[in-house]
Length: 189
Image (cartoon, rainbow, N blue to C red; front, side, top):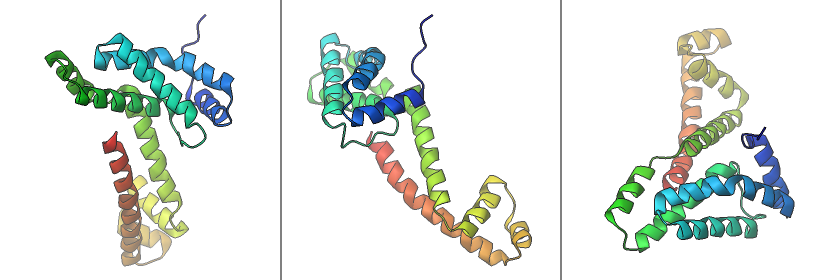
């Protein structure tokens, strides 16, 4: 029975091994992910040999920069790289009407991208929240996760309602600052 592909933990483990120049781990990732990447590139470019070249370039670049590049979600990283390279190629070439339509339709992120982006964004949000002062974390979670109103939070924690509002405002400012960075990253790719 053929396995249905690697899970995220297996991929993360292989990525860590690749960072340490493990050629076998790289080959495993390559053989697992090359075909779907190639299909994705073909769907954008409608040119088999060019799609192969672009996917090959992405893998070469990944290997060459393995120790420098920080990859949290490999599939998302690779698919965004494909999309970026394909769009750059199409931008620089004279392409036909069908290719233009395909490029527009593919601009909607694939399920892999969306899923990984949501996970990455959720991770960022949780990281920002966990870096808040403890009291601020508690108040923010009571307000935004448990949907408890400010007056009730103030009563539960025996603090003023104004203190609750200030803590929530502080948490939201921190989140906005972090999410502004994330928005810039996501809109780029």
